[in-house]
Image (cartoon, rainbow, N blue to C red; front, side, top):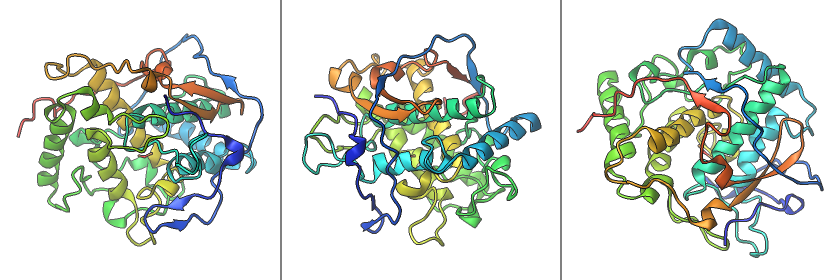
Amino acid sequence: NPIQPPELDKCGVATNAANQKPVEFSCCPPVTQRIIDYKLPPVFQMKIRPSAHRVSPEYIFKYNMAIDRMKRLPQDDPRNFLQQANIHCAYCNGAYDQPGQGTLDLQVHESWLFFPFHRWYLYFYERILGKLIGDPTFALPFWNWDNPKGMTMPPMFVDPRSALYDEKRDPASLPPAVVDLGNTQVTDPLQLVANNLTIMYSEMIRVNANVYDFMGQPLREGGKPKGGGSSERGSHTSVHIWVGDPNQPTREDLGNFYSAGRDPLFYCHHANVDRMWTLWQYFLPSNKVPDKRITDPDFLNAAFLFYDENAQLVRVTVKDCLDNLRMGYDFERIDLPWLDYRP
Ligand code: C2O
């Protein structure tokens, strides 16, 4: 059977995976009785998510204003900035058990739930920001770390006066440091760029012999995660580690599941992870994986709960998030220099 959505009223203490200690604050969302089955609204105008390195001052201003308003919402509003961050903690640090499965944790990493869960998470985050600034076309930026032009931390997140700033980041990773997609500890920038392109080619194309190699292994009700896909395990995790601060007890913020959502850069990073899914589905040569769809009902009917932009609790399913265009957003077109970067 498919993974069932959590029971919010049974949300408990989360565990910091890095030291196995309880997380010191509660990451449980407010409890609401009424749950609506979410229906994707009709798309009137496609939102285009921009590359974070290419946005205009006007965009940065709007984005700042939106995040600032999110931070100022009442603490118990599920759309509040910290409430949004806690969604990640609750779904990823054992605060929820799988309904009817004893104390078996609900976990959305290291399986085929990885892309769908994070896609829905960003979807509502983006809609909340749009609502807060009265701009339904607002689209999150993506951190284009797969392109040499985007391999540094996007400047708008680094200004300490900005709402997009977070002090818990590795000082060694601030610009002009080049991102390390392979967690290699290499420091020579040219070497890093070459490594990064090789890694992208490898995880997007070379290593994927079937759909699960990219998407992650099946996870069904009552089961435990059996392994994430190439992108999740590779560039995705490396960027988390690269940004997280080694001077914090457990690499907060981005280097730890429970705290990752507290850095606004998380959503920009994940917008590019989400873009990798779209590129893989619709833009990559498919000789090795001719059918990129998973038709297993345990995948399609897996469900999660989120608060939407009106603070209404909604139930969403994996099958409704397989096509980003149906969800009303697309990505700015940027070339893919790793596409034929064979080692
Ligand atoms: Cu839920 Cu990038 O992790």
